[in-house]
Length: 328
Image 1 (cartoon, rainbow, N blue to C red):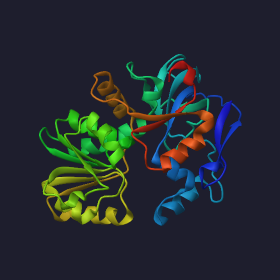
Image 2: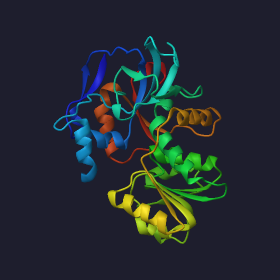
Image 3: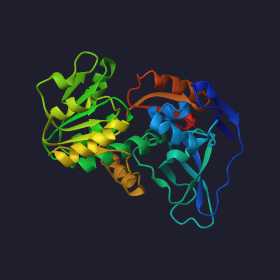
């Protein structure tokens, strides 16, 4: 089968389009013919091992000291089950699914084997494979944090990094919960942010939200760029500060803040479950949330897709179309 092989840590040139052996499912696995996967900022960071020092060491120990052990990246996907192991009961051949492969990866290939109990569910009926592939990672992140924040109707929610993968789902979920939403991102993304329901937008290249008069009930920082003390000052009493990508310092400061004040700091990592993925599918099929797609790249251009994501210009999601001829 065709796959994009991760040959070394570093720039996108380490991703090579090759022929590799097609996997065969074990007794409790399914074989998925992948239609689409994605490239997120997290994928690009993993590829280059671009993490803070406190995290890069354990990541290298897990993934391989000198070179990556897991040779095929891609942490989310959508496709069709073409073979099932003899002990599989949840799925059958022909099922259209979407799944979060997580740090086992495997999405940049024509086929992947997934455990029956993986974070996997039937694909939303009103989504293409390409649209569905972008839901598991970012959608589950956004759902995790906003559920823990217990968003109430009429509350004011500020999303920092509103134009990215997590941000676009977070904006829509906050609207679904009845919040008044403000999105922060760069100039070129603001029209898109408005199009998915933001009542207000802030261009971070032009102004600092911590210097404005507005305060919020919830600040959801999906990228880890908001100033910690300044953000806390912009929270109303009993406000919640959600940090999807906290720094090492924020992890300690957040616990202190939560225990010593009426404000709560909610930190990652997000829990990924099949039950939550099914919940997202229900919201999608009800028309409450949708996938924003910026660009599509064929499998053989995955390295180029990584280069684009690293520019920071991505609006919503970047898709790897493994089977583009079938409409995603």
